[in-house]
Length: 456
Image (cartoon, rainbow, N blue to C red; front, side):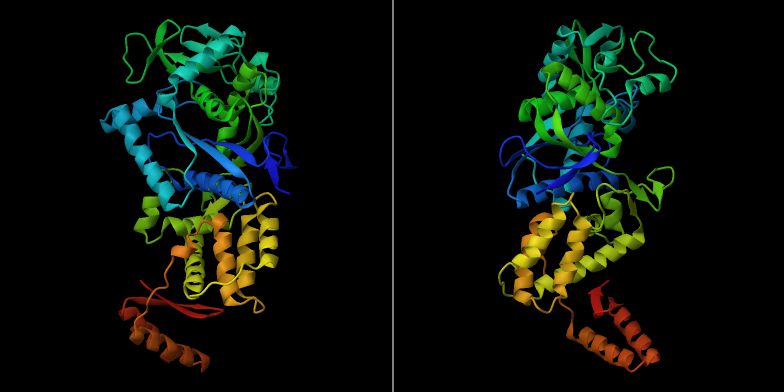
């Protein structure tokens, strides 16, 4: 039995797909106006781990990921500049060039993180017709109305608005800031379609509803998810920051248009913090995968670090924790690569592994089980290797492709001599040998299982 925390119901539920062993999953993807940071990587990796867990448990998953290349404004209050248009102006490139470039970076980063390829990639600019059609349905049914700067969804017509985030419509109304647009019927109403400003020319605009305009951010995901997965699908994933207003608004407009629930399970990843603080460029703790690589870490080191955290708990990134993850991943790689032959999957450990991952995606528990098995003398190394490769269908660490680092004989001899010196408590000689190893561009690390040597 698979159990998942459902943000909508605020409780852990048994996962029951709509159609047998088939699962429809919609994952909120990037707005491609800038580089992804490691917080985005955390969000995308947890969605990947969820998908891998479902597939490992026997389900067939159709994952749809959207690419927002228009309509995401700088303010959640439906004001400000389109993020693509703003980036275009600042970088001196067209909005399309910006979108193409950062979409390419996004998929390169997905490959580095070893994320599974989605069943469908849905770009917002490729689904304008579907969005216009959905907006028209909302207008025809009386859920949307037109004012001077666009077409808005009337939140007063959907009493459950705020249920996903835990808000109530009344509290949202009361807590709304001074209304920027007095034409709106309610402060909480949101744009499903925006009109281009008069006497200005946008790079991305379309003829609809008698004017030039562009889609609201929320309408994109509703139109694309329903096109590929139907009016109701199994799981909608995203980051904690997507809950309100983005996913809240998706639910309202979709369910008013179709009369059916949008998704049965809402899966949200909590924030990634850096040294206990929110990631921010102004604090100089804003990191991309490229930043990590320049410091000698790989995306797979980051993936291992993510496996040590639970998606429903904020993760705190530190360079020390990444270094520890790198060392642990290397030990795991060396263990698997050091065993040439394969054996059989150990069903006892497989059952325990399934129990962990199916319990609200307990990856930290599953990873701890990996090391328990490695140290278990009752299981042969051959069976350990085969079982680890089986587990890696979920972990995604590419264990089958890892090769053990070849250490030169002279370096190994120095390491062995140093081990002898340490056992004899000859610390001076131990330090001298460490320095000799260092001069040869190798690092020796002392662990409870002995010394590990690697290239600098």
